[in-house]
Length: 211
Figure 1 (spheres, rainbow, N blue to C red):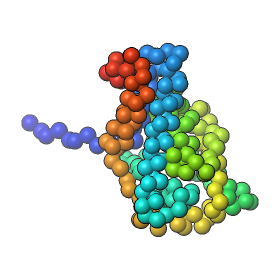
Figure 2: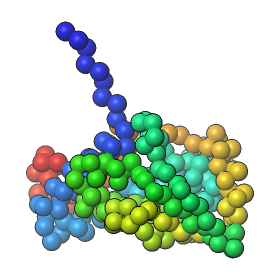
Figure 3: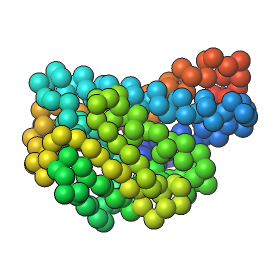
Figure 4: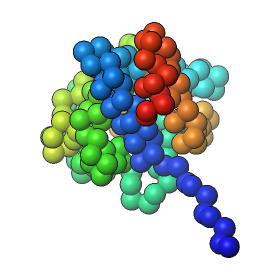
Protein backbone atom coordinates (compact mmCIF):
# COMPACT_ATOMS: atom_id res chain seq x y z
CA UNK A 1 0.00 0.00 0.00
CA UNK A 2 1.44 3.33 -1.03
CA UNK A 3 1.85 6.04 1.54
CA UNK A 4 -0.35 9.05 0.87
CA UNK A 5 1.46 12.30 0.20
CA UNK A 6 0.82 14.91 2.89
CA UNK A 7 -1.44 17.79 1.93
CA UNK A 8 0.61 20.94 1.37
CA UNK A 9 -1.51 23.95 2.20
CA UNK A 10 -1.22 27.08 0.09
CA UNK A 11 -3.07 30.30 -0.72
CA UNK A 12 -5.64 28.31 -2.72
CA UNK A 13 -6.77 26.45 0.41
CA UNK A 14 -6.98 29.71 2.36
CA UNK A 15 -9.09 31.24 -0.42
CA UNK A 16 -11.35 28.18 -0.66
CA UNK A 17 -11.89 28.16 3.11
CA UNK A 18 -12.93 31.79 2.99
CA UNK A 19 -15.23 31.07 0.07
CA UNK A 20 -16.95 28.24 1.94
CA UNK A 21 -17.32 30.27 5.14
CA UNK A 22 -18.63 33.31 3.29
CA UNK A 23 -21.05 31.31 1.13
CA UNK A 24 -22.58 29.50 4.09
CA UNK A 25 -22.79 32.70 6.13
CA UNK A 26 -24.50 34.58 3.29
CA UNK A 27 -27.00 31.83 2.49
CA UNK A 28 -27.88 31.17 6.15
CA UNK A 29 -28.06 34.69 7.55
CA UNK A 30 -29.58 36.14 4.36
CA UNK A 31 -30.03 39.91 4.92
CA UNK A 32 -27.60 39.89 7.85
CA UNK A 33 -25.03 37.86 5.92
CA UNK A 34 -23.11 40.60 4.07
CA UNK A 35 -22.51 42.61 7.27
CA UNK A 36 -21.35 39.49 9.13
CA UNK A 37 -18.88 38.48 6.40
CA UNK A 38 -17.53 42.02 6.17
CA UNK A 39 -17.11 42.17 9.95
CA UNK A 40 -15.15 38.89 9.91
CA UNK A 41 -12.84 40.13 7.13
CA UNK A 42 -12.13 43.42 8.90
CA UNK A 43 -11.50 41.65 12.20
CA UNK A 44 -9.12 39.23 10.50
CA UNK A 45 -7.25 42.04 8.71
CA UNK A 46 -7.02 44.27 11.77
CA UNK A 47 -5.63 41.43 13.88
CA UNK A 48 -3.03 40.45 11.30
CA UNK A 49 -1.94 44.06 10.91
CA UNK A 50 -1.68 44.51 14.67
CA UNK A 51 0.42 41.34 14.93
CA UNK A 52 2.79 42.68 12.26
CA UNK A 53 3.06 45.96 14.17
CA UNK A 54 3.92 44.13 17.40
CA UNK A 55 6.82 42.35 15.70
CA UNK A 56 7.99 45.59 14.11
CA UNK A 57 7.98 47.40 17.45
CA UNK A 58 9.85 44.53 19.10
CA UNK A 59 12.54 44.90 16.41
CA UNK A 60 12.70 48.66 16.90
CA UNK A 61 11.34 49.44 13.42
CA UNK A 62 9.14 52.42 12.52
CA UNK A 63 5.56 51.67 11.53
CA UNK A 64 5.87 53.03 7.99
CA UNK A 65 5.02 51.46 4.66
CA UNK A 66 8.48 49.91 4.24
CA UNK A 67 8.13 48.03 7.51
CA UNK A 68 4.56 47.03 6.61
CA UNK A 69 5.82 45.38 3.41
CA UNK A 70 8.75 43.81 5.27
CA UNK A 71 6.55 42.15 7.89
CA UNK A 72 4.02 40.46 5.61
CA UNK A 73 3.32 37.01 6.97
CA UNK A 74 2.51 34.82 3.98
CA UNK A 75 4.37 33.24 1.11
CA UNK A 76 2.92 31.09 -1.66
CA UNK A 77 4.16 27.50 -1.96
CA UNK A 78 3.17 26.84 -5.58
CA UNK A 79 5.77 28.25 -8.02
CA UNK A 80 4.43 31.05 -10.17
CA UNK A 81 1.31 31.57 -8.05
CA UNK A 82 2.40 34.85 -6.48
CA UNK A 83 0.99 38.23 -7.40
CA UNK A 84 2.16 39.51 -10.77
CA UNK A 85 2.93 43.22 -11.04
CA UNK A 86 3.09 44.29 -14.69
CA UNK A 87 3.23 47.99 -13.90
CA UNK A 88 4.22 50.28 -11.10
CA UNK A 89 3.80 54.01 -11.31
CA UNK A 90 4.66 56.79 -8.92
CA UNK A 91 3.10 60.18 -8.50
CA UNK A 92 5.53 63.13 -8.62
CA UNK A 93 4.95 63.40 -4.88
CA UNK A 94 7.26 60.86 -3.16
CA UNK A 95 4.68 60.04 -0.50
CA UNK A 96 2.24 58.51 -3.00
CA UNK A 97 2.45 55.51 -5.32
CA UNK A 98 0.23 53.08 -7.16
CA UNK A 99 0.70 49.31 -7.41
CA UNK A 100 -0.97 47.24 -10.12
CA UNK A 101 -1.41 43.45 -9.89
CA UNK A 102 -2.51 41.52 -12.96
CA UNK A 103 -2.91 38.18 -11.17
CA UNK A 104 -3.46 36.96 -7.62
CA UNK A 105 -3.51 33.44 -6.10
CA UNK A 106 -6.73 34.21 -4.21
CA UNK A 107 -8.50 35.42 -7.34
CA UNK A 108 -7.23 32.39 -9.29
CA UNK A 109 -8.58 30.04 -6.60
CA UNK A 110 -11.99 31.71 -6.43
CA UNK A 111 -12.24 31.66 -10.21
CA UNK A 112 -11.31 27.96 -10.26
CA UNK A 113 -13.86 27.03 -7.59
CA UNK A 114 -16.67 29.34 -8.70
CA UNK A 115 -16.37 31.62 -5.68
CA UNK A 116 -15.67 35.04 -7.18
CA UNK A 117 -18.84 36.50 -5.67
CA UNK A 118 -17.76 35.41 -2.19
CA UNK A 119 -14.14 36.41 -2.82
CA UNK A 120 -15.13 39.99 -3.51
CA UNK A 121 -16.11 40.35 0.15
CA UNK A 122 -12.52 39.55 1.10
CA UNK A 123 -10.90 41.84 -1.45
CA UNK A 124 -13.16 44.78 -0.68
CA UNK A 125 -11.84 45.17 2.86
CA UNK A 126 -8.87 42.99 3.77
CA UNK A 127 -5.96 45.17 2.57
CA UNK A 128 -7.32 48.37 4.10
CA UNK A 129 -8.05 46.48 7.34
CA UNK A 130 -4.53 45.04 7.40
CA UNK A 131 -2.92 48.45 6.98
CA UNK A 132 -5.23 50.03 9.55
CA UNK A 133 -4.37 47.34 12.08
CA UNK A 134 -0.68 47.93 11.42
CA UNK A 135 -0.82 51.74 11.62
CA UNK A 136 -4.11 53.67 11.30
CA UNK A 137 -2.21 56.76 10.16
CA UNK A 138 -1.15 55.09 6.89
CA UNK A 139 -3.54 55.33 3.97
CA UNK A 140 -4.57 52.95 1.20
CA UNK A 141 -7.28 53.38 -1.43
CA UNK A 142 -8.26 50.42 -3.65
CA UNK A 143 -9.73 51.58 -6.97
CA UNK A 144 -9.78 48.33 -9.01
CA UNK A 145 -10.10 44.65 -8.14
CA UNK A 146 -9.74 41.47 -10.20
CA UNK A 147 -12.66 39.97 -8.27
CA UNK A 148 -14.78 42.95 -9.35
CA UNK A 149 -14.07 42.12 -12.99
CA UNK A 150 -11.36 44.75 -13.50
CA UNK A 151 -8.22 43.93 -15.47
CA UNK A 152 -6.02 44.33 -12.41
CA UNK A 153 -5.97 45.23 -8.74
CA UNK A 154 -5.02 48.90 -8.42
CA UNK A 155 -3.95 50.17 -5.01
CA UNK A 156 -3.01 53.74 -4.10
CA UNK A 157 -0.63 53.87 -1.14
CA UNK A 158 0.20 57.01 0.85
CA UNK A 159 3.08 57.40 3.27
CA UNK A 160 5.61 60.03 4.28
CA UNK A 161 8.52 57.87 3.10
CA UNK A 162 9.90 58.07 -0.43
CA UNK A 163 8.78 54.85 -2.15
CA UNK A 164 12.17 54.25 -3.80
CA UNK A 165 13.93 54.54 -0.47
CA UNK A 166 11.30 52.24 1.02
CA UNK A 167 11.98 49.51 -1.54
CA UNK A 168 15.62 49.44 -0.50
CA UNK A 169 14.66 49.09 3.16
CA UNK A 170 12.22 46.22 2.82
CA UNK A 171 14.71 43.34 2.62
CA UNK A 172 16.83 44.78 5.41
CA UNK A 173 13.83 45.12 7.69
CA UNK A 174 12.40 41.76 6.72
CA UNK A 175 15.53 40.13 8.12
CA UNK A 176 14.97 41.95 11.41
CA UNK A 177 11.24 41.45 11.88
CA UNK A 178 9.85 39.36 9.04
CA UNK A 179 8.18 36.06 9.90
CA UNK A 180 6.35 33.91 7.38
CA UNK A 181 3.52 32.01 9.03
CA UNK A 182 2.35 28.63 7.76
CA UNK A 183 -0.92 28.40 5.86
CA UNK A 184 -2.37 26.21 8.61
CA UNK A 185 -1.88 29.19 10.94
CA UNK A 186 -3.55 31.64 8.55
CA UNK A 187 -6.47 29.27 7.94
CA UNK A 188 -7.02 28.76 11.66
CA UNK A 189 -6.92 32.53 12.18
CA UNK A 190 -9.45 33.05 9.40
CA UNK A 191 -11.73 30.37 10.84
CA UNK A 192 -11.49 31.88 14.33
CA UNK A 193 -12.35 35.33 12.94
CA UNK A 194 -15.61 33.92 11.59
CA UNK A 195 -16.28 32.15 14.90
CA UNK A 196 -15.84 35.45 16.75
CA UNK A 197 -18.42 37.15 14.56
CA UNK A 198 -20.85 34.26 14.05
CA UNK A 199 -20.99 33.46 17.77
CA UNK A 200 -23.48 36.34 18.03
CA UNK A 201 -25.93 34.42 15.86
CA UNK A 202 -27.92 31.31 16.89
CA UNK A 203 -27.08 29.71 13.50
CA UNK A 204 -23.31 29.84 14.24
CA UNK A 205 -22.74 26.11 14.63
CA UNK A 206 -24.80 25.14 11.60
CA UNK A 207 -22.93 27.67 9.43
CA UNK A 208 -19.52 26.40 10.53
CA UNK A 209 -20.55 22.76 10.09
CA UNK A 210 -21.88 23.44 6.60
CA UNK A 211 -18.72 25.33 5.62
